[in-house]
Each structure stands twice: as structure tokens, then as C-alpha cells.
Amino acid sequence: MTARIFVYIAHKAGVVDDSAAELLAAAKTIDPAETPTAVVVGCGPEFDAVCNTLCASFAKVWKIADPSLAYPNAELVRQALVKVLPQGALVLVPHNHFGIDLAPGLSIKLNAAYVSDVVGIDGVDGTNLKVVRQEFGGQISTHVRCNIASGAVITLRPGAFKAVESAPAAGVAVDKSAEVGALTAKRRYVTTIAPEAADVDITKEAVLVSIGRGIQEQDNISIAQELAEALGAGLSCSRPVVDAKWLPKSRQVGSSGQTVKPKIYLACGISGSFQHLAGIKGNPFIVAINKNSKAPIFQVADVGIVTDMLEFLPELTNKVRETKQVSA
Amino acid sequence: MEILVCARRVPDTSENEIQLNSAGNDIERDDLVYSINEPDNYAVEEALQIVAKSGGNVTVATVGTSEDEEILRREMAMGANHGVLLSDDAFAGSDGKGIATVLKGFVQKGKFDLILTGVQAEDGGAQVGGMLAAMLDYPFASLVDSIEVLDGNKLKVGREIEGGNKEISEIDLPCVLSIQTGINEPRYVGMRGIRQVASLEIPTYGAADLGVDKAAVGEVAAKVKRDDYFVPALGKGAEILEGSNEEIADKLIELMKAKGGLQ
Image (cartoon, rainbow over all chains, first blue to last red):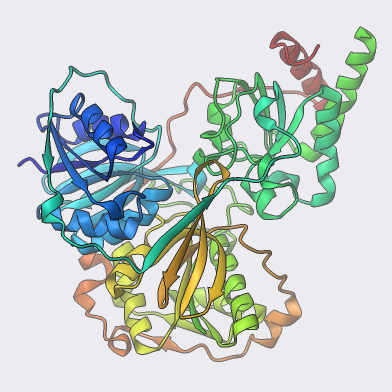
């Protein structure tokens, strides 16, 4: 295969995103013999620092510097990439809020195949790249074939590919800026709004009682609240509870919410989507309570309880209170 | 504003456990409860709220078969003005690009100012909206969790990015937005509402009606194909506590004490 794997590098404030090393590892599973090219866009001194950092891990770095790329607006980034990428390129992009914005349209403009949220790569068979995806919130997986004869844009799930230690690359940055020309967008970045200050800081709690769709009704939240109070724990939740406006966004654990690092995490009626799990760090002791024995949360939990949380939690609350009375 | 919402009917994971069928080539579809893809329902609600303020019409379209009409009726019961089924044997087996190609054909038949999709389907790739926008050369924003109509034919949109942050942009119309759940509170649809639209004729358009080249859609054009489904190999897997709720609670308390979570 001719050299054609490109890795899109995300960066912020002069620091290369963790996804870069994961994408490099993934590129090696597509073709161990190829030297992937890092493609990076931006501008200013922080961008120069990013390019220098990349040269330590990538043998080839293509950089596109332009004032309009100071903030990564997917529409502008797409135009820049379409100008420089060769016919038939395989472009790896992280499957995050930026990749979801960029990658589908990029595949159209490159007339390339698109496969998203890839969690595993089984290799190349003829003109097909064989990958693994998940569906239905991780309840089931699929082997997918993607015809890469005319190139492909592939987004990779953050955390699914382990970064591998490799020898320093002593790479060379090639400035592709002149090939790009003027960029114009029909969508213009205005600002970023930070989350509102929270009533409770769930990131500081040692024990979290966390609730998901299994809570079913707003009135049932008191059941979890009582357990949290009995345990001296915080109350957090997964996305559906915030979508229903039953708890504020500041209580949401996940990639679009808070990153928590408790010692014990009680996941009650939470299925365990990867976006939710991405918000749980520090290897806590995870207890999963869920009616659905197939829920993906049971794959990552230390202890599982297959039962209706609405019946189990009050029982647990009573036992916790009794235990505390005895020890007091 | 004329708004098109692209919607899909999918198995409802809050009502079903998704299992492998005996042949291993699909999920077990007997007895599955289907409903509208959840983010698509938020997209319809958002469209209804925009036209309530700014005037206009909401059209809901889906690429599928006559079975998929039920979600169109449901969204019409919610208040959508029109439901349209895009259906043709040639569409079967389409990948994301094939679906976007069919939708492009429908968009070009009408005059829509704003096109909404849900951010992602349970069995999808968060792809059709972005592809459709690129095919039409419309601007696109994904993961949209707020929309404000501005003067001068543009919108102010918020995108949900990492860590609870919200990215604000201005976007020119016409555009395509993929809608994140939680952007609004979709209204309740009662049985009475559904009955009122039960006998309405749903217009159906095929490849010829839409000017879609049959070679550009369906199985023949798909570059991305599923080989099979499988149940993911378990990690270490949880130790399942067995017994009555009372017995399990006792065991769990001992475990939490050991982990320092209960003093």
C-alpha cells in the first residue's frame, strides 16, 4: 500500500491532545509498515510549539498555519484539508465533538468512505478495511467492512486504542500553508461559555450514588437522595436524567459533563455508555445496579446486582442506617 | 421558516434488551418495540418551537418502508405539518452516504431554510446530517443544544462540547443542524392525537420522484457494510451478587466498608 495514512491532530493551548498518540497506534494497526503523516492546523506561537512536539513522535508532520484556523472551526478545517490531502487518503480523526463536526462532510468532499466511532481495527483485506463498531449503547458489536479504494475518513473512539511507546521520530514539519489559500465560512465561532457554578461539586465526592434512566420518574429521585444522605455520598447522574431536567447539568458524569474520581461509584439504572464511562476516572470500585443483565455497565463494574433499583435502593438505605446506628 | 426534520424509526433501547439472533447476522428483531430515534424527537420539538415564534411549517421525512410511517404520524400528532416517506426498493442497504443522497433529492424538491436531524441513531454513526450539508454546500453544526433565530437570515447556535462547555457560533441559513437531546422538553403525544392523524395520507416518494440515481444509493453504492453482529467479549466482568435484596444489601455494605466507603 502506498503511503496515505493521515492522522488529524487536535490540540489546545499549545498542548497536543491525548487522541494523537491513540490515532498513531490505530494507524499502525491498519498498516504496520507505513509511516503515518500528522496533519495539524492552527496559528501563532502555541501552534509552533505543537508542531515541535509532534516532530518527536511523527516522522512526517504537515502543518497548515492560518489566522482563520486559530480556533478549530470544522468548516474551515475541512476546506484546508481538502486542499492538501491526496486522492485516496485514509484520514483518522478522534470521535469527539470536533470529529463529529468535521468528518462526515470531509468524507463527502474527498469522495471517500466514512466509518465512525470505530473501537477496533482488524486489518486490511484487499480494498476493504475491517473494523469493529458498537451499536445500541454498546449492547452489541458489529464487524464492519469499509471499502477504502478511494480513501476513507475514519473516526476513532477516544480511549479505544492504547497509545504505544515508540522510538523518538525526529520528524520534519512540512509547511503546507501556501497550498491552502483563502478560507471562508458560513458558520462563525463567537465564544465558549463555561458551565454554571454548581450547588454541589460531584468531582470532590469520595462516594457517588449515580442514577440513570432506571430512575424512571422525577418523584423517584428522593429514593436515591436518601441513600446518598445515609452514606454521606454525593448524588450524580447520567445524561437522560439531565435531559429530563430532573437534575442540573452540573450533576452529570460523562464526556459532556463532569469528570469524577470517587473511591466508590454506585451506578443505579445506568446502562454504561462510553460517553458516561469516560467521565469516571481513578479506577473506583464500581457497583452496577440494573434490571437489564446485558447492560454494558456490568462489563466494567466490580460488583453487579441484577434487580430493580427502585426496590433495592430503599432496602440498602435502611441497612446503611442500621449499620451506622450500630457503629455509633 | 420552512423546516425539514429528518427522522428515523429505531428499536427503543429503553423498552428492549438488544440480543443477537440465532444466525448471528442481525439483532433479534421479533418482539422489538420501535419508536422514533430519541434525538430526532427533540429535533421535531425544536422545529415546532421555532415555527411557533417565527412562523412557517415543519415537515418530517424518513427514508424507509411503510412500517416507518408510524413515526411520521406520531410527529404529526405532535404538531408537524407534513410527514413524508422516502421509499424505494433501490434504497435498501444504503450506508450513511446513500441515506444522505436520498434526503438531498428531497431537499432539492422543496425550499427549506433549516434542516434538522438527531445527533445520532442508536445503530447509526452521527453522519447523515454532516454528509447532507456537505452535499448541498450548506453550513453544518453538530451536537446543537440551543438555537436562537437572529435577523439577517442567520441563527445563533450552541454546541455541547467537552466538560459542560458550550460553543457559540453564528450560522447562515440555509443550514443543517444535528440536535442533541436535552435541548428542550418534547411535548407529550396522547393516543387521541395519534388517532386524529391515523387516516391521513402520507405522501411517498421513490428514486424517480426525487431524481435520485439508483446506482448512487442502496446496497450497490454502499462502501460501508456490516458483516455480522456479535456480543462483545466481556472484560473481567462484574461479580454478580445473588440472593434476596436484603441479603445482597448486607453483602454490598460489607464490600463498601472494605473499600472505605462506609465508616
